[in-house]
Structures are given as C-alpha cells and as structure tokens.
Image (cartoon, rainbow, N blue to C red):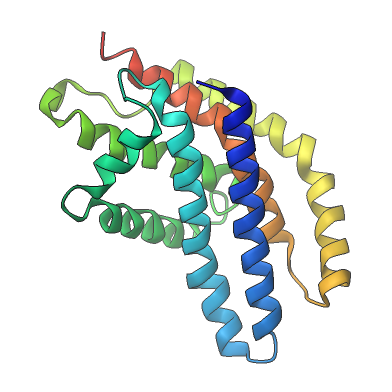
Length: 203
C-alpha cells in the first residue's frame, strides 16, 4: 500500500468533488429550489462518490483484497454499485435528522465504516455468519479518540476557510462543504483501523 499515492488520490478527489459542488452552487444561487436540490441531493451524491474513491484506495489493506480494482469489481457485480449508493445516500439522509451524529466528524466515519462493511460482506459472503462487522470496542474507542482529536485540530481551520470562501464566491453557509472536505481527507486512518479489525477475522 503506497501511502503517498493514497493521500494524493484522496486529496485530488476531495478537491475535485468539492470544487464541483461549489461551482454548481454558485451557478444556481439565483434559484432557491435548485440550490436545495444541489445541497440535499446532488452534492451528497458527489460526496459519496468521493468517499468511494477514498475507501477504494485503502481497501486493499483488508486481507487478500487484490488491490483497489477488486473493490470496484465487487461493486460491478449485479448492480451492487447502485445498491451501495442508495444505502449511503439514505443513511446520510437519516443521519442529517439526528442532532449529534449529523456532524461530519461522526457522520463520515459512520459512512466510511458502512461502506467498508458492505463491500467486505459482499466479497467474503461465503464466510457467512462467522463475520463480525461491528467493530470491537478497542477499535471503536481508537476511532472515537482520533475523530475527537481531528475535530479540535480542524475546527478553527474549517470556520476560517468557510468564511473566506463565502466572501470569495459571494455565497453563504459553505461551512458544511468545507467540513465535509476536511473530514473526507481524514478518513484514511478510520478506514485503516476498521479494515485492520476486519482483516483479523480472515486469519
């Protein structure tokens, strides 16, 4: 696993996806209904696609996954790609209505682990009931501690950057997109920790 390549691909996909969302929002800011669709449907789907790219780069850490191509091969089977998109979209929609877990510091790790769990379960379905997808308490505590640290380390950066973007693009409320972008970049350790837990079951 080439960490530098993973970081480069992650950074490129996050910047590309976020830039696309900002561009779309700026083009549609005169039409409120279009802005709502962008903020609640199109941009979340773009974020999910970026998350899949990030997960695909780290996924080979799990057992004999055969590289990131294996991740996409699993999704190409029998419409699994569309199925996973639907799962992640409606999960994100449900999380948005819960006050605490709606914050990306919690929501994105949950979606990251859900993505890995679903693909892992599809890939190793022959193991059946022997797989445990819920992370161990040790793994969960490590992820929680990491995300708390990430939150306090990036909170001021998110606020400052979003204010500058609001002024630059003449928009308002960019904090969510900025926060999502930052936390998407920080998903690599979450996926590694959870992937290592799953890998331990493959013996």
